[in-house]
Amino acid sequence: MTMFSSLIDEIQDTRVSQLTKRQLRALTRITDLFIAGSGRHSKQQIELFDEVFETLVAVIELETRAKLARYIATIPNAPAALVRAFAFDDAIAVAAPVLSQSTALSDSDLAANASTQGQGHLHAIAHRRTISEVITEILIERGEPNVVRTVAKNAGARFSDGSFRELVARSGDDAQLALNVGTRHDIPRHHFLKLLETASASACAKIAAANPQFTDTVQGALTEVIDDINLEVRKNSPDHARAKSRVKRLQIWHELGEGNVHAAARSQNFEQTVIALSVLACCPIEMAERAILNENPGVVQVIAKAAGCSWVTVKALLLMTAADRRMSKVELDRARKNFERLETGTAKRVLEFYDARRNSSAVASPSIVPSQPASSEALVS
Image (tube, rainbow, N blue to C red; front, side, top):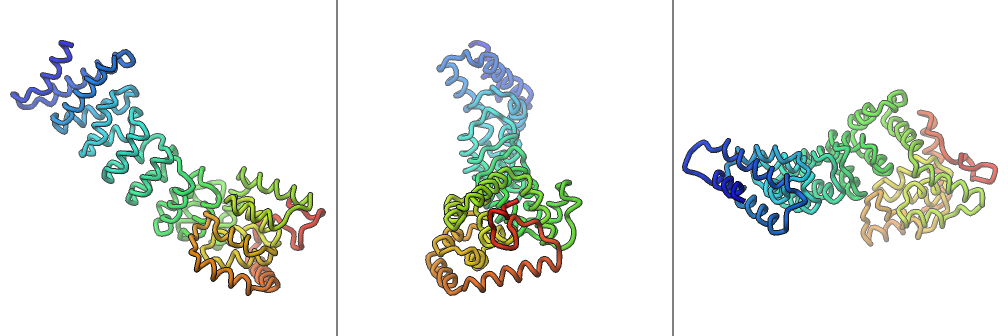
């Protein structure tokens, strides 16, 4: 350990000015010593290295720390204690390289950092090649717009359903964020629909422009743009295909009814819910999708009434997390009274009016239901 002790003396020598290069060289050599013996160090040796790194990082100057941080950021087996020390450095020039690149940092290290450090640290983490759902949740919760836009644009980031919901909510008044979220390939379709409904017209146009497969179909009014985009997304959605197949089988067996809508809504199965509801209500699937995603509870009540559903099923629809309504007991009681007052004939006339108005202005997206109640001869196509 004679060389090791000599290197420590070099780093801590403050008798001569302008020691940056010598200190950096010594620190780099200590790091190389650790890496060279990686996997063979005893527990006591690792503890010694850790103690030395933590002590030295606290006394060496910024320029040296920044240079060494850039050096170890891309080394997979870099000493964890040194990487962690740099990750929590107040200076972004030191922290950013390891936070954005180092694989020596665990998820628990990143979570602790993202939960306590400033926006510069969060922004560096948002650039990592891969980011777990746990970390993206913290970045979205604590991050300012620049951080959230960056992580939303990161193809290697993974998001929970709740995180996607928050991203969509924040996209309403942030066109750039809407574009970043809307062009992600992993965004669940119900969140994509919600995004298109709430984002500005310019943001929706940019989302369409960013997807070449939509170029030929995107034209006319915003509603048509949304429906055209949604039609393409729906065609390529495995979840939608599975749900459609299940509903078709239920129709063949004459077993499709309110219970299927209720069960799908309770289990938060968006695709199966909208398909079953649109079949029972004899309405275009776009209408059922918008009803479930619309914050106004009256829309879904009209379709559910036309489908012959009871309040129990309507309540399950209103409480689906896809719409994020978060209705209170008072609001649910009010919705129930309105639903019970609504007559089935009135609800059906509203749907007929809506369909007629759409057909007069544009060709609607193909419906999965016939114009009359489904039978064994008229099944989901």
